[in-house]
Image 1: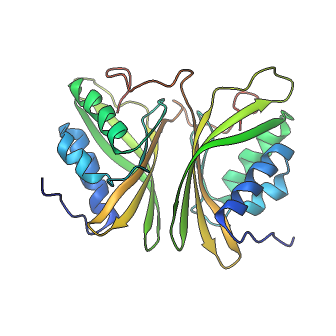
Image 2 (image 1 turned 135 degrees about the vertical axis):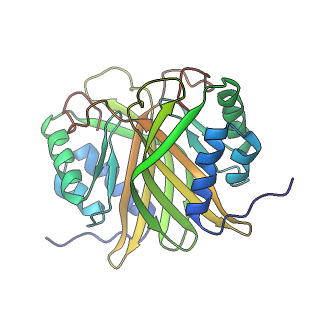
Length: 141
Length: 141
């Protein structure tokens, strides 16, 4: 399989969310670095590591046939020579549901490889319904 | 206030968790980049951005006087010239409780500044009690 080349981390990010919306496993895995060190945390889920574990999770998710539409907002970027960090809010609508879900807070890390930029870390966690200050005693830190 | 200089991202990480255990606000904030772009997500919490918002959250957390002991495990690192990524499990024991809490999955991003390495992103989310495969239908992605 020939793999797409993403000249920038933004291109890789666009391809990631397009693959997610299309539930296209090949396109999804073409975005990830082929690396034992890749990390994926789905909202509320455990940390998955390594290309095969990450692929298995997307295979299971795409099998559910739930279709999603994702709009990104509140992006904060940090760009280095080899690594790029994108902190975003994912605003997800499940197709068939009237309203978007509460936002998902996501840290995406991209790495520059010989074949362009690839996804190295995808860490997603559900934001609380009403964004609020940290409440002492309710959270660990 | 003179600020500590951290020659490596590992040094900054050690200082972060030491400040957390000691509930030392000055030491904690000395680890963070003085940047409007810093990002902090406490477990289950919203995304906080900017030095002042992050400082306010740690102030509130440390006021609770809950003392924590943190052991890191399962570290995965990616190191660039300007940015370093540490993916870790935080194994947290609340002082006075008999057993550790379920692990917290954390992505820490450090940036190299003129004053050494500093924390740019701290994204923490609770791992499920029993690590499991992604369950289709229960998670968004």
